[in-house]
Length: 73
Image 1: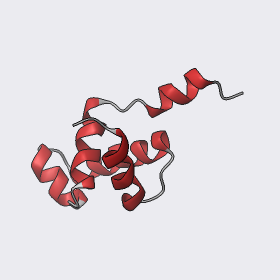
Image 2: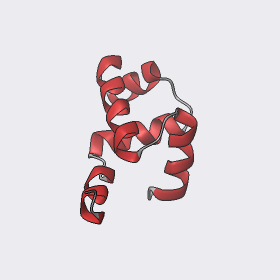
Image 3: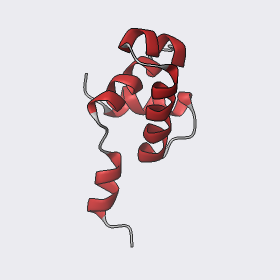
Image 4: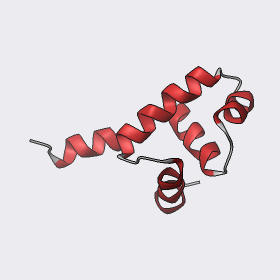
């Protein structure tokens, strides 16, 4: 059973995931995000997959809408 607490835990993004989500929502590519955060594109992709899973979004467009609606700046 998926309790409210379990759903809330999944929605919690780590600080690196929040950084990636914010930059992706600004329209940056994975390569651009990687350069900006001094990480590899592979690491950015890893975080992005986790973000999609945790937030139950399926595209960068959905992620952008979520970030603009829900995440404090």
